[in-house]
Amino acid sequence: LAACAASPLTALAAKPLVIGFSQVGAESEWRTANTVSIKDAARKAGVTLKFADAQQKQENQVKAIRSFIAQKVDVIAFSPVVESGWDTVLREAKAAKIPVILTDRAVSVTDDTLYVTFIGSDFVEEGRRAGKWLLEHAKNAAPDGTVNIVELQGTVGSAPAIDRKKGFEEVIAANPKFKIIRSQTGDFTRAKGKEVMEAFLKAEGKKINVLYAHNDDMAIGAIQAIEEAGLKPGVDITIVSIDGVKGAFEAMMAGKLNVTVECSPLLGPQLMQIAADVVAAKPVPKRITTQEGVFPAEIAAREFPNRKY
Ligand code: GYE
Image (cartoon, rainbow, N blue to C red):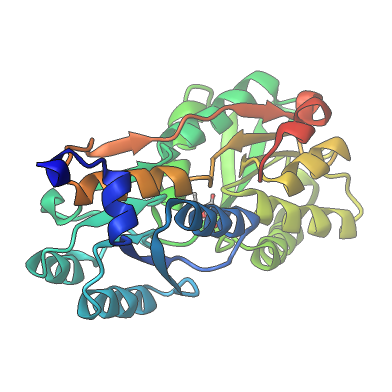
């Protein structure tokens, strides 16, 4: 009876929970903060964390998940680099009776019993927020009033790239003057963001009024390319990005970035709680959405000291 009344935390103290976590990689400031959050939260909760970095490769994630199954961990959690292609390995986890928790990015599977819950942001809404800010604040335009936008997309096939594009396009469609003239992936990294922005500038030059980057790191890389092309980022080209990492706040305070839409990477504590609940057979919601805001450059200096990532 006493055992039945024990809280999940007491149970946890008796036999530490083992979680296998497959991380996307270390492609951005966001990702680094996400990894720190998960490792810290695991330590604080007394969870044994088996952490694997997939270096942005799905095949590495599949291998990691298979190895977690072989090791008979209590819970498998992962942030899927891309949306599709998970059915087989998730069926293997299910057959082994190991619950799977998705963090940060979603999967597209026909059978949604293949995972217990998905903890993370609403990326479509983030794209909409970026679009809304732009519709209300765009100052740069071509002489005929057209607002020419270049877009740096995230990793091809990833949930945040697909959804941030979708939400943004949905909102800017309200005003036909807003046109996406170039769109290409920068794989969520600074280096690729810079490289692709250089190509955009070469092709379109001063025609570019706005840059929409699916994350801050690509925006920061692009800022360098814009400066090297002799233009003023944040002034000659309005820049809108997503995440809200410290680097973005620094860029805003320097007047080089106009706005960042928040996407919180601090998912560790929630993950540990949900994992404990799942193991204790408590019901958990199928979708846990992170709450977040929008930070324009005007409030960057005031908000900077409060930023946790
Ligand atoms: O925006 C980007 C990272 O999946 C939300 O991945 C995450 C994205 C984030 O590399 O910076």
